[in-house]
Length: 157
Image (cartoon, rainbow, N blue to C red):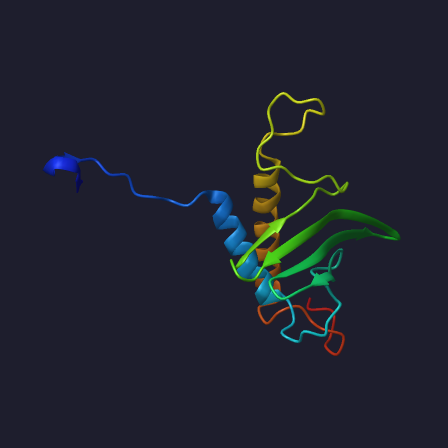
């Protein structure tokens, strides 16, 4: 309860940031834990387990933003399957990171009308960032000290 105009008590609502902003902030923090501190890196990669690999490439680096590409692959025998390939932008001033596009390169909109011409889900951006967060949490658990660089052992099984 809060005091409104003319001294009348009014019900006030507590502000809660959207889940999407929470994903952006979490993804930023998790990515910083995985990426090398050294600003000279261009690619980091690691085996998450016997069949799953992760590769992060530096696409663009500027004062306020960094754009990376995160690729996960599964290998069964001699067959390698791309699971996810996300272009991700980190905004250092706001301390958030967001998935920019889908696996096929289509830019993600915050909200789509539904039904739409291609029958994309109305909350694709939300789902992509939620999935990225879950993926990054698993990677941070596997590599609590960050992803190995070229000078370190690439397998942590």
